[in-house]
Length: 313
Image (cartoon, rainbow, N blue to C red; front, side, top):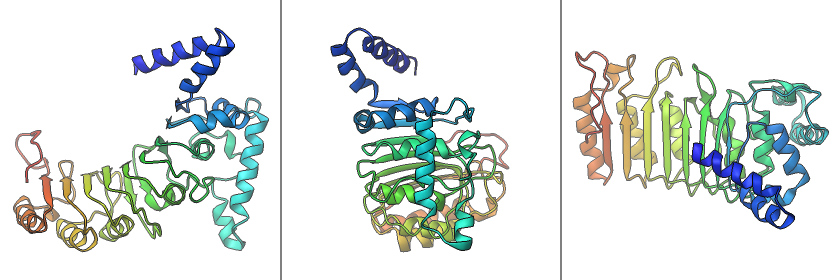
């Protein structure tokens, strides 16, 4: 991280040296950006479409709200226009529901997804995206097939309890159908995802807990999935968790291209009876017959000694 900051600082210094060096350094400076002061970055990207098109990698951490007096008018105008485009597609009660967290003052609040929605929609050539997001809908300003270069995403739920609903990320999936690798932290449900990601081959869930029906929805959207890693979360994330038997049946039925499956239940304190280590060994044999390598990490709870045992087939 220090090396990255030093690199950015050096490039920024070059920008003030001469016009020629400014042109060279700026191109590299905007190759990878962070969205900490998101309203300033958004103002620049709105004014300089050439820079917006150069951005290949973006990280948007948890951000605070911006004072109304400090928010650039260009950013306010862009938010209003994108919000109108999005809401005009809804009528009646659906419109009222779509208005959730898209109010006039949402731009100035902390703890929302608006910065993520604005910045991601301005960078059509993104290849990697990492962001913290909240419970509710996001990426609503990203039009379908508007981010065809995006290949890798890492999205984390920005709270210490409960979890994100994966269907709230569906607009990003529609905007970026060529995603190949996805990592999610703290997912608690997935209902009616209604998208297909034909190029997605790797899925990684960290500290997550969701039902068997959610697992079906997820796998149905990824027909060519090869690698699936699941690290079970605690009851603080969600109150539903698919069982080992459900995992067996769902993966065998809905993941025809699967090659590697890792199930880490080491933090499983609540659902231990549904994840028996001996039964996991039998399930591993079934997967082996299909050419799928299963790695299973049992719960540490109830043991006399807490171990850091690696995955074992």
